[in-house]
Image 1 (cartoon, rainbow, N blue to C red):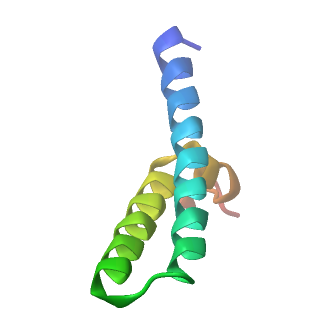
Image 2: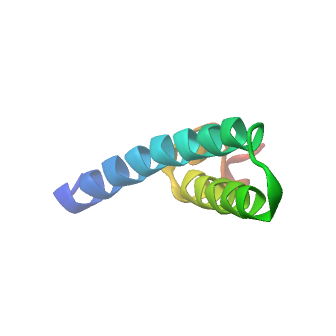
Length: 70
């Protein structure tokens, strides 16, 4: 496996961990959010967390591509 592909895979795995942490942080902060500013910040953190999680290799590890399904 080329070095660049290995580094890219590691980067996506770390982005997935960061996305999951951001998602959990956004959910926990949402419990204390008050008003429109708190809700806007909550939505921003949750959206960024979901985006990082979807871009990561963590999700791809659990979800098989369609061409690999029986």
